[in-house]
Length: 618
Image (cartoon, rainbow, N blue to C red; front, side, top):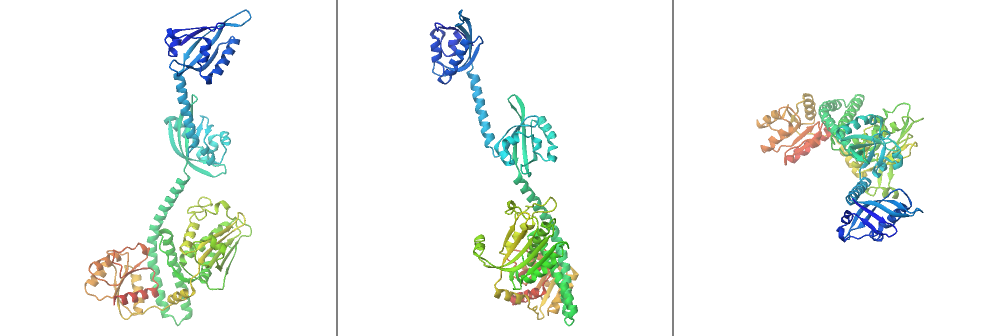
């Protein structure tokens, strides 16, 4: 510190030696005056200092001012000056002022650094991609960055008028005291919670909170990260793992169920063959056979759903499919719901997987049922009609080259779909149904199935005015349809005494399959597993073709096939499986004379494959 003593009338100033040193002078070389003092004040500070000086001249109270004063080296020194009039004449005019000067340069530098840091923090705070809260110990907001209030849909002022607990759903708000205690104990904490958006929806968030000092008081500083996308991915992973577990379970069930169906279908085939002269019995057995085929389709459908089983594309009449499919699906529609179907008389043939399309129809009808659940006079309408693409349709679906389609339409007069949801309804796991009443997979699977068939789905809906789903599938060329349908209806190929080695661990399947093949003119050898069958071939038994199950005790079908190929035996080989056929893997190069078929067998197809493979061998 340094002192000064100013004679106001003369303008002369006496100063302490420290005053000179304060601004870089030696005491003996420093000479000062009032004007010299004013001239060496920083131009930006001069007006304020002169004003304060004039106030000091008029008041008995001391005046304090802070300003920059030029040093000897031309730089600037921050000075804190306190001055007071200590002598006046009889009229009150000031005669003498004394005071002290203090070097506050370091203090000002610290303040400058602190302000720079504050501005840097403010910039990061305002520009962060994460939300940020500063909250006092009573849970009131002190500051909120733009990201936070924008994501939650509030204005900044709306949030400043709230307490933190008003943002949290009740189950999360109840845990706030516990989490505050944790932060106070540890100084920092990271946890997951959720906040209400202004529209009432919930945003899951991850909070990283710590205690900081602000204006001399402890406050909570929280980084608030929106983890909606992460939660969706976690849910998809859980669903994927669940589906994988379901797939494993379904695979085992499918194997056993398909073995039973193989035995049932085989016995039906034999019974119908023996009762051709009994039309009534044959019709009833035919109905049972259709049910067996439908049951096999359901197993295939389960594999498709759980393990992405390959689709089985063939040409069929969509009219017959819709007639049977609607009859099956509508059995689940409650009696209080009015429903009807209108099917065109024009025959519409498509190439597709009937099982997948049955699931598509079921999903559409189930969605319609949900939509009309609380609707007065609920109505559902299903129709099938031909559709020729117009210019508007072509512009909407430029990826399609086909112009002629079959249109499956399902309409309801239910609650409709909000416009904001229309572009999301086909996303996996998206659902507007309450928890436990929807997986969000139905329409996603429907969309994928229709795409697999080269078709498109169109939706027309309005909230509270019902919904219409249209599935448009490309029609099959008439000549191709006729050829394939004739092929489907062809009689089974008949053998000429060729020997088939039938390998299966299920006696009922082995027995009935052997009996059917024997009735078609083949000689049958039987084995219960691959090891027995291999021993028979190694003993010199003449065999023209092997028909083997895949999964068997001791030695399975694939291992048996590989042993034959390693020994140089190129016998035609058919692997029959109740599992997903795409998961049956044989050695590289060993499948040249091998085919893989699903159980239960279509004996017309099986006999055709046998004849083809034996003919190729010759």
